[in-house]
Length: 629
Image (cartoon, rainbow, N blue to C red; front, side, top):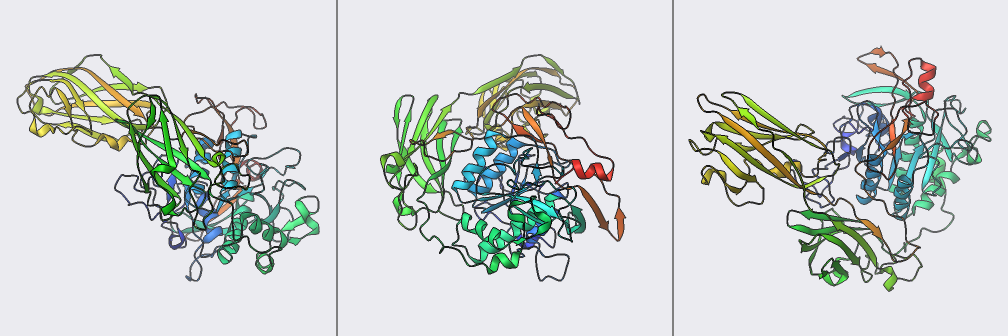
């Protein structure tokens, strides 16, 4: 969970994870996980399926974790056969929003990643990230976090996310080649779990390069790779047993007394050689529901994607295991199908309800895992009880309309532009566009729509020959009427030249631009008005289980006021074609989310508890304090 990965790097490509449930480049969410074309992970900055690293930090971290071994080039990772899922939430400058970090962690857990490396930090405690880590713990996921680069005592001043108090969090300090605590590294006799090499670490960089970085950012991936190596060799271990083996195999160094819990420094051989203190647990916890994502289209609520904590026996799940109650009473569940994610954890539940209002979907409890355990949603150890059902609630909102009725002249061989600013923040589930214009030869016209992210689609392209005007012309993907089979004034609903669904899943907030391009002389007109009708995506539902014992669930927030954090790599010396590149600061201002709906990041002093941006450093010493861990 970082700046992405250069997934084409020759020392990484063979170990980059591939989503077998997704078909590359078709613009569809084939596996039903809510993300389009997520082949190697996801880019939460640009909201697309390309998590390519445009900074370098994530690629460097990745080489330490799982650089390819035995290939006669570059470096080898601690787990040279491990798989790397690229989850980009930091942009090219190292800046990002914690909402995206939460979404990245949720994605990792949902798609089956057992370990996440988190080489970023700062800010204060935030309930949403805590919930996401708790959800990860329920799924048996280990969250490795860099301790920080402020030479600070985390016992006194907490550094997040490393200081979240869950037993699946491993906080990592940095040591140098003499096994001394790195001068920049944060520490904590009760809050930092282990130390690992973090000074002058040589690893992969984008564009087939290699370079040396220092920081707790570099220490954390040594631990992530070690945990991965152990888990690959003993896959039946629980997350807690894997962490216990990490700690039991560590060396205890006098140089780390009162700096790290039990003075521990990573020893991979010692970890592998350790015999488990107890036999591996072969009967894990009974299945629970991890996430529910509802789907809403133009016709209303169309279904839900349900993900469980483990693989489910498909023969134990059918329509009778789901009950949906809407604003007008019970709604018929028409089918249940596997979501084709390469496992049997995720299922699509099918139904149709056009009514606006609140819905409650009850799941289970008579759904079993592969060993026959029924659901135990309340966590009391007794499976299949009524209280082991899971309830997900969602409210289906109506469409949101935005319009511009300011007339604009359409001149010969000119582009006529009209804009609409969408001030609300939501993901697009469906979009229809209505246009009214006067023109004496509509066959001269091309009409395009550009989104706030500069994606452009064509609505109308020189149809209607010498016909006049477009009157209440609605462009709708669901229409069966084709423009080429119709005549001016094209009143009614028509399928656009290119699909409006290209905008599905993108954020609506920002400036939308409609352009009418006149491509011939003599005929002119007036662009009178246009309107966009959105159906917002129900990307995440509020979810609850009937018992207070149930695990916390994360929710998806698309817009928020956020506080700032730093990330973790204090110095870097890059070597490219034999030349030394001057060390430069690598700073990230990851923003912490609060549950509000207006983004207004503030800039204050670096140590304030209010929203802040950490200063870029110019000197090497300052760089060590304020840059990426």
